[in-house]
Amino acid sequence: MARIRHSSESNRLAVIGAGPVGLETALEAASRGWDVVVYESGRVGEHLHRYGETALFTPFGMNSTPRGKERLRTEGHRVPAEDEILGARDLAERYLAPIAALPELRGAVREGCRVTHVGRRAVTKTRGVVATGDSSRQTCAFLLRVETAEGTSFEEAGVVVDATGVYGQPNATGPGGLPAVGEEAVHDRIDRHLPPSLAMARERYGSRRVLLVGDGHSAATALGMFDTLEKDAPRRAPLCVEWVCRDRGRIRPFEVVTDDPLPARRDLMDAANRIAASSPWLTTHLGAEIVSYEAAGNGALRVELATREGRKRIEVDRVLALVGYRPDLSITRELHVHHCYASEGPMNLASAVLAARLAPSGVAGDCLAQVSHGPESLRNPEPGFFLLGSKSYGRNAAFLLAVGHRQIQDVFTLIGSPAASRASLETAPSTSSRG
Image (cartoon, rainbow, N blue to C red; front, side, top):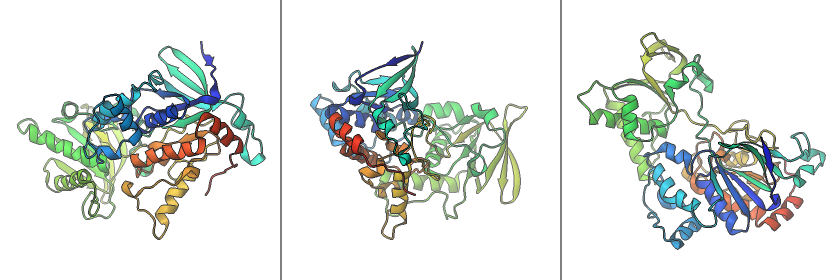
């Protein structure tokens, strides 16, 4: 039987997602006197665990906060060096898991708890519309629908931070971002995340015909992985990779940032370009689009491509589709959140990011050029609700974890302690979103 768990909801700050931004938010909240609870559908650092051994571009110092490192050192933990390049799983195990076990968060981080919806107690979406002057939403607690192995419950909170990321919602592989014909029917043959280890990659792709889709950093990582598989086992049946990537008019398939300050990223892209230019096991379909998938009688997948020369059919055993990810907007459908029509991030922040990019002296699209746009950019029409981390950028892949850490400070500039939060929500401007 579903139940409603009541609490002193005005003092409770609910964080959805126990990733890098979610846990740091919880740590900051606890230091300011909030009764904090973190809901995580999987395990702490779930998305980082899915990346597994994949190395991060940025050094540990850019992926951590002074508060987090100070608290771990105080508790006797050995913290990685500032310039150390960690694998994704390493960051989860060596930094996030110890933070989740700190005394102030012990018992607050609840793994295996999926928040499926967030609304307001006693108020539906059509009530409390800012433009009408109706402020009834501000006096009603948030209501979170939570699913666990034991059942479903409704839990209350005064402030909600959605830091669920985007890695769980892959994009489709067909033309124009739409699903290709037959894509849903063969979904079990399409992998949409990098394998977490070389051993798993060898088991899944070794000696097989593979269709690789994508042209970003993940695709570059996949090419390096395939190259390693070939070099490690040259005597077995050869790997055959068909690579579909968009043609952006570049001289090389992967764009290398001039004077890249991240050596790990520069080395990855240089290596991927070398592999693309000289590997006999790789066939490149530049500028092609996937039109359809069909299960062939011999156990293979028959894939139809639209190329510059016309239609082409190839047969493969598996597909590794690395075409980006998108936010799950269904969680907050009952809240007043204005999403950008292009990125699907919250409109205030999306407008600020775009304006900064278009300004004559503005930042470029690279993640290292991203900056915080201040507390007001994080406000939503829904008072007390905040989108942080990569989900705040929606489909814009330029998010940098250091920006997420700055967002945390910006949010607490707005809400402060529980008492300050109550006062700020009562006097919050009726912000509709820009643009």
